[in-house]
Image (tube, rainbow, N blue to C red; front, top):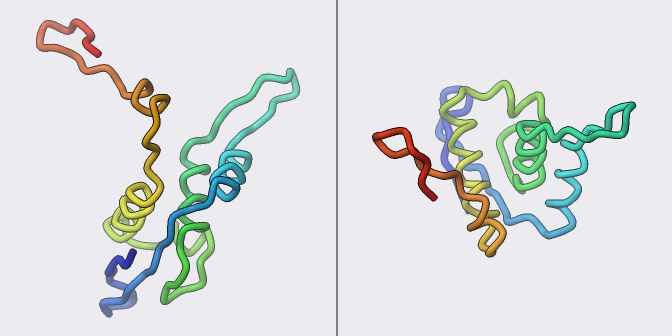
Amino acid sequence: MEVEIDYKGKKEKVVLKALSWGENNECVRVGMQIKADGTTKLDFVLQQEHKLVKSIEKAPFEVTLENLRALPAKDGDKLFNAMMKLNQVESEVAKNLEAPSVAKDNSVEK
């Protein structure tokens, strides 16, 4: 998938690919923090950043976390949205993870 961004005042294309199962799992491991007491914590933002790095096949810049973080937010969002679209989870598990909606009366609906 190609995404056009503004890079250094020029329209440039970034090419992204879908991740393999192994690449995706590697990104999950990067975002997983195991504390001294044995509990785990997932840094979702770090996980997603690593997924974006792994997804980019061609860009007008060296593909690193630092360079992605330095992009203007609108361009980073374009790339992130494309990566999410390419790597969307279409399983019963993902469907069950959908956030519940809140009705006008503040009751929670699934």
